[in-house]
Image (cartoon, rainbow, N blue to C red; front, side, top):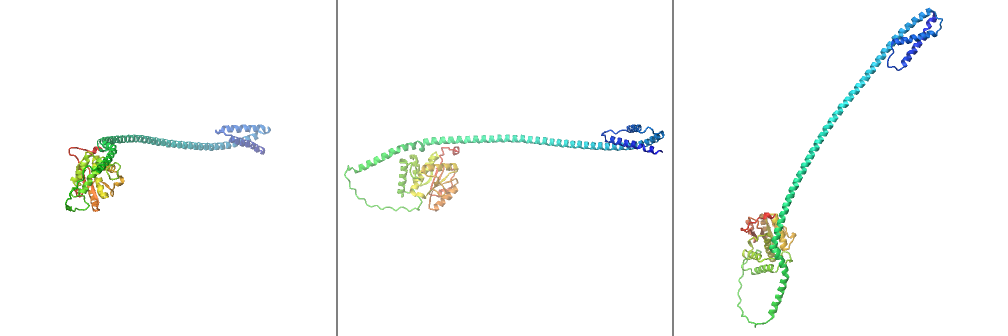
Length: 423
């Protein structure tokens, strides 16, 4: 074979390699077919042959054609192998894209499920909160209604209490207008100055009449001395007003009663009666002192205020006679009645709150047993207990009757009184 002919295919192979590199460099998603590559190679070879020397012989052309066919077969096989490799790479790329897309879709579906679950939870929470708000509003409404009902009931109760107090106030005012604390007191205060003037004038007139000698003096015959009988000694410290031998004490008591009735002192010292004393009151006090001997019961005057007035006069007289030894013990079954006694004694005797207490001049009791124990202790301490029993007490303990001074107000059997209406 001619050596020149063997060297001629080299530029054809180089051109084919360059064409292959150019085809690989172009970005084309579709791979070229084998037939197109063969056509390109044939055209390029024909162009090369036309540009080569025209003086090549036929034998050389035949040899070069055979070599070209052999090289084209190898090139076609190589291109098919590369095409298969590119197809596999493209398939694997598509599969990875499909896998990523499926994974993304799965993630989105999971996110959708999570969002739906969260929305369901939020809706359930909303419904729960809505139910709670509704229940709270219902509870608040019920609470407001109950509170309003309670306030209305309290209002009605207070109105009833106010009406009772107003009726009681009106009853007390009417009672004061018709008893000693009303009209009598006003009249006594107005007339007191005129009484003092008349008393002074009569005293001056009596002293002037004594100085006049209208009749001759008569010499009286001397009377033989009379032996005085010694009074029977009694237990010291215990008053005996009903015995005839205590004439001085009796006179002093009567003088004080007359003073309270005729010359009331509305601004006197404490423990002295400061209220108008009517004849009926004086009669009751005298009966208690001289007939009952300071130990007995008196029929009620129909009013606790008037009973307090009689008791105040007895307390005032005993304080005049025995001083601070007298301790007044008042028994009533309710705090309200004890409060009336406290206010009444303060008003009638001019005393204050410091005079009320366990070791003071006046002690208030609701139970007779405690009062009896206190009176027993006072007696042992050489004190003089004065027990005053309110007319509301239905039963009296026999232990109270052992003490020397006690005054009980008995309710009138003809008059039915209900003290509970006052409170």
